[in-house]
Length: 197
Image 1 (cartoon, helix red, strand yellow):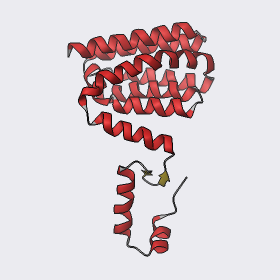
Image 2 (cartoon, helix red, strand yellow; image 1 turned 180 degrees about the horizontal axis):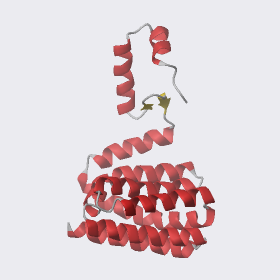
Image 3 (tube, one colour; image 1 turned 90 degrees about the horizontal axis):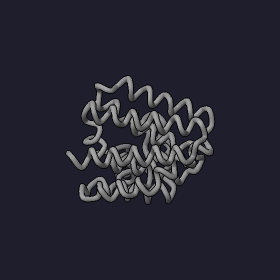
């Protein structure tokens, strides 16, 4: 739900813009709202707030990276299988664009890391299930530092590209078992690579 404009809220509460912005920043830090430049502030759902709390906790605790990888192993192969069953042409096109983006940025880790996260997020989005979509967003945020390690080199990026390509091929064919297997192999490669760093 979108909050009223800053001007409206300042008038409604009889406060200055500076005070309002401080309050909005505090609400955003606590996960109650999301502020988008040029679009305004939006109230987060309870599920989004809870995921924000998890993101904050995991992001501040480096010891949890292995645990988050275990979480990914539990659900991402199933996610890939579900995506293979449910995906539409629009999401196939988006997945292909993210694979192309990763390939085009094989020598630019920052852009490649974004393309990697986009691929996983698009898989979540393709299911049409907002909880799965939110969980994938959480995992991509929570594993940011881990992905910085596994995707920091050309070899790591090439491995990720190979994995994404195999997953996309299976998803596009509607091969649920193949997509799940390809995702499992992709995550195992990433875990192995991360453990060597």
